[in-house]
Length: 141
Image (cartoon, rainbow, N blue to C red; front, side):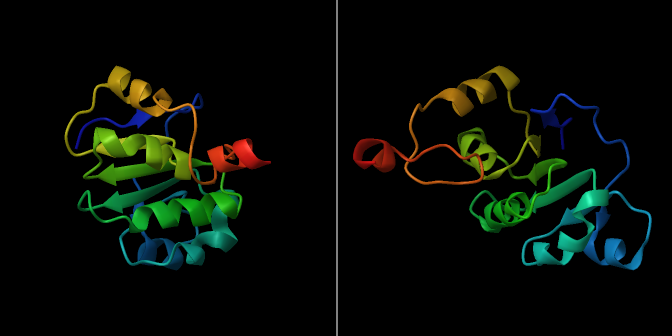
């Protein structure tokens, strides 16, 4: 894994993330890692004390992490939400739209190319946590 790329202006969280099971059994952790298949809703009572939630992407085709991000952002989580693992450049814009604001890919991604990918499209087709208006709504009110 390479150093995380952050789209946030606050300081990076230094504490390592613990597993969801460990977090639920502890009282002082401020960073947690969610694996595919784990229920992010278990974290909802604790969102105010978490600084980092890392979501694992073991394979680029495993999209469960997108739903995890959406659930957490819709519930009001404002801390760092990091996509970790098999994160590819062509997925970053979609991940960012779902609420990810940091990325820890297994293989390096050029930060300039990542910014370009995020800004590539002016219009979107569906709503997500980034609150951009879908193109159909712009066209038809």
